[in-house]
Image 1 (tube, rainbow, N blue to C red):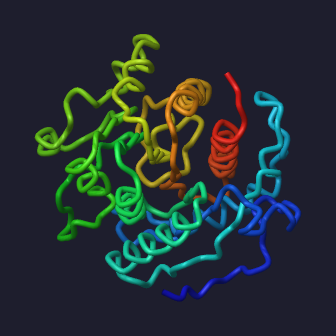
Image 2 (image 1 turned 180 degrees about the vertical axis):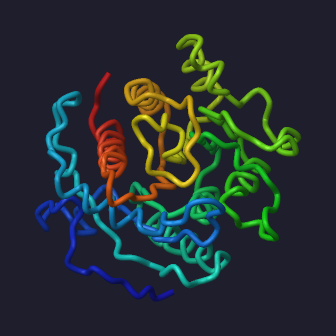
Length: 292
């Protein structure tokens, strides 16, 4: 399949081109500027642009890991879709481009866009990897079989995966009562329980299989540090709690890829854009640098 790319000269965070070629890069970053299925605030289709703009202002040395992970190479894929295509078509394109880069043995990452982008990527990862589990970090369960007449709505983003794989859900604090019958009861970590102590971290990691795909909705964070998202919910995760947990996941499991979704940029508030970029870069550091 041929993809029509844009932004052909841009590199992630303005890194030197020698670290941004496909052949030399361990990591591939796929932006998916799509928000057709959002049901409250729209604007997540602008998330990738805001994310990439914020990246231009990020220091590329990470203090915690004493590393410059960009030197492992980050290939930025120009936009594969536009916001006018159908959700089904978007999911097909994400699936196909994911398969393309999986065949090249790359570590594949995504920036959305609304959460429906995860449906296509998880399908592709599931075809390549056995013993796969999904780590879903979100304020919402996203387990509706159908919403507003579509099985591809962002509120349905984890339903298909839940029928195929262990789905470990972290930070949940909002759901419809009908979703209760679809949750994997032993694999869900509600936010009001998480706040009691740190024992949940080891418990959650124990439930993950060896190969893990991570899907992070920005609204898993408390809106005091990440207000720019489509459906903010009070009482979310803090920055360092999130990093502490994810560092453990990367140390103990084989993380095969991840996405960050539901960034809805606000021209009057750019801290969430920067949080998303810092999170992205931290996760690459945890993946490619040996740290304890």
